Length: 349
Image (cartoon, rainbow, N blue to C red):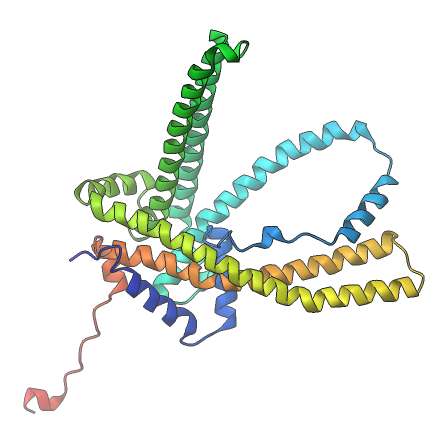
């Protein structure tokens, strides 16, 4: 019988304990954190964005930057360079995300993360997933432009913007309608994204099919089991929210614990620097930036380790849910036991 979304939680938790704690290996946790970061599984609600450099360093940087003459002639080439580099970097990260998605899948199945070996196994499916992501991003972006641009152009052509008080009700109803349609569009895009990585990627990995063929098969499954898949989506959203809150709390505690010794060292360094007659110059600002960068790297590494159980649990959760509906994945997840050796006594010899 296919596992329900609720029944899949237990096997996923057991899998997470086996992979991460039996035995505990820091190297494995580090590799899983790296793979989860590029695969998009690393929790973003960990509170890192709440950390800001001390105001002293910020003001020092401000005063140091005030002494640099502004060369506005360089602004145009810099903007052109950024306009070229940003799309290239986005495409590189999208491709890395596609490759690491299959590395994470193989790591969960094997209960062991080997980045180099798993990276070389799924080059073809990863490239197809990358193409799928590009097409999906173009569709989502085009739909968003239409959903926002068409109502905006309509209101402009009708003259509502020029006299908003005369059309306040029509504008309000239009805004509500556009918001609801836009929210449904974004939710639909997120569902497609999540179901692709949860249910289409295993098919691509095991049968080397395209994402379009994987979705064609998944669509038939969704048609016969709308309720279980809908409950899976609802339960996963709920667990993601709870897990994000838990990770944020733990990460905040870790940040405070790390700030105490590092902050103390920073204060002592500043006090000794003032006593030695040092001021803010290129050398001291560079040293402060290096020290802050080292601290942020340590902080990011520790917080990434906190998120590792979630990086393993959620893919395992989708795998156990889908394995009971996809025989090829079930055969990989539950391999048959090796045959028992035949002893001479059992043959009556």
